[in-house]
Amino acid sequence: MAAARVRFEPIAVIHLPCRFYEQRPGSKVFPEDTVYFYAQTDDFAEFSNFAPYGVAVDGLWWPTVEHCFQAQKFDDPGYRERIRQARRPKDAKVLGMTRQLPLRPDWETGKNGVMLDAVRIKFQTHAKLARLLLSTGERMIVENAPADFYWGCGSDGSGLNKLGQTLMKVREELQRQNPPAAAKDRFV
Image (tube, helix red, strand yellow):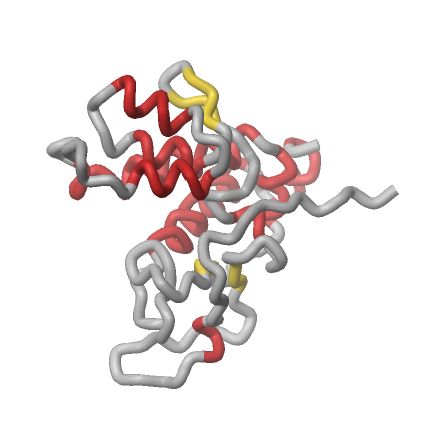
């Protein structure tokens, strides 16, 4: 019996793949075999921070990486817990976008490390996801988020793709821990 695909909500209604953008100065050209992810119907949708794969961070279980990441923006333990308890990752993101509470003073300098730690834990926790990430080999990974020019590729491909870079870093770590012949055995 084939495993059912996990369904989760996309973070935007409009899906404008950066792989089909009009080439503009400053935009990137991605290799033909690039792994794109974003919407729940995409191949590799499990790479999204909205995918329903929890992580244990700071002694607490977070329903998704999005819940965990958004909560880490704040020093207020009550507000962090409110984000952790959010029903959906989309709700956690909305709570994390508030500026009615101050962000941690070190947020801008520390957010990439927070993301790396949460994503690393996600793939260490869920063997199926580690296998999926390893299956991408050396291919470029791009978060195909048209409205996100920091974590994704943006609508015209000029985004920084920090989440894609994070995934490729975690993949590299997994590859070092699991040489190709042994990868199947470790993640059973």
